[in-house]
Image (cartoon, rainbow, N blue to C red):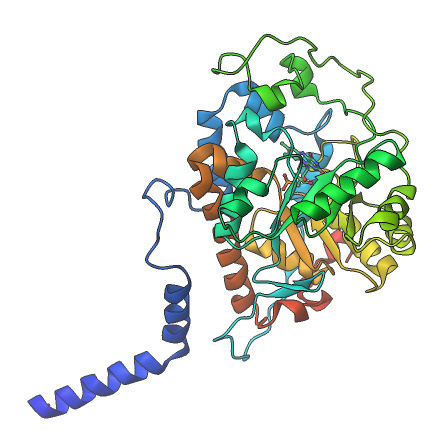
Length: 396
Ligand SMILES: Cc1cc2nc3c(=O)[nH]c(=O)nc-3n(C[C@H](O)[C@H](O)[C@H](O)COP(=O)(O)O)c2cc1C
C-alpha cells in the first residue's frame, strides 16, 4: 500500500468510527458526566452497595444499625431486595438507542430521571445539619428531595434550585394539620408527603439490642461530640404512639386551607390505592417504609402491580424499598411506577463523603438506569411498559 493509500484508508476509518452509534453514545456520556468532577475517593465505590461498606466503616455501630436495620427478623428487608432480584428483563433490539430520554413527568413537572430521594428522619445521627447536606446533594443531581422538619429557607436564600416535598407522619388534629399545610406551602414545598404507615413506633431488634434512644436521631449518638447517655432507651415491643388516629380526613383538612398536593406514602393494599384516589391524593407511593414498620409486610415491588391496577392511571404511582441498581428502576417502571425513591443509599453516600457522596450515589443510579434502558431497547422512560419485566418463577 502506498503512503497516500494508507492515509486515505486511515481517514476513512476515523470518519467511520466517529459516525458510529458507539461513538455518539460515548460522546453523549462524556457530555453528561465527564470529566468526573469528584475527588478520587468519591469515585472509588463502583456501585451503591459499596457506599454502604464505606459508610459502615465510618459510622458508630448504633447509627449504622439504626439506618441499615428493619423490623424484627428483617424478613421484609430481605424481601425488598430478593423480589427485585427474581425479576428478569426482556430486551428488544434493532432499535436506534443513540438517544435515550430518561425524563418523566410528575405532578405537572418534568424530572430528568425517575429517581427521587425518599424522606429519612434521624440523619443527624450521621452529622449535624444532615438534611441541608442531602438537599444540596439532591440539587446537584437535579433530583426531587423529600424532607421532614428541616428549615429550607436557608437553602432557598442561597439560591439553590431544588425541587422538594415536605414529609410528615400526620398530625393528630385539624388545626395542626392546617397550620402545617400552610407553612409547607409558604416555604415553597411542592407537595406534602403524608406517611401513613407509622401510627406507632415499630419494633426494631437492632435498636432494642443497642439500647438506642430515639432522641439520638436529633442529638447524635453517645461518644460523638453532641451525644449523651440514653434517657429513654428502646425496649422490645414498646408502645409509643405517633399518629394512631390518622385517617383520610387529613387530606380533607389540607384541602380546606391549601392547594398544596398531598402524596400518600406507605400504601401496599390496592384498596388503599383506590381510597387515596377517592380522597383526593395527588399521587401514592407504594412503600413499606424500607421494611421499618410492619414486620413481614409485603415487598414493595411485589405490591406495586396491584396498586397500579387499582389506581388505573388516575394519579401517578411511585415506589420505594430496595432500589439499588438502574435495572431496579427499569423493573419498577415496567410494573407501572412513574418514579422510584431511594432511602438508605443516599444516607450511605452522605456518611461516606458528605454532599458529594449524596450526589454521586444519585448520579451513579441515574447513569445505570440510562444504560439499562439503552441495553434493553428502551428509548423513552415514560413509554416503558410491562412487557419488559418477565419472570414466570415470580408469578408474572
Ligand atoms: C434511616 C431512615 C429513616 C427514615 N425515616 C423516614 C421518615 O421519617 N418518613 C418516612 O416516610 N419514611 C422514612 N424512611 C423510609 C424511607 O422514606 C423509604 O421508604 C425507604 O428508606 C426506602 O427503602 P430503601 O432504604 O431500601 O431505599 C426512613 C428510612 C430510613 C432508612
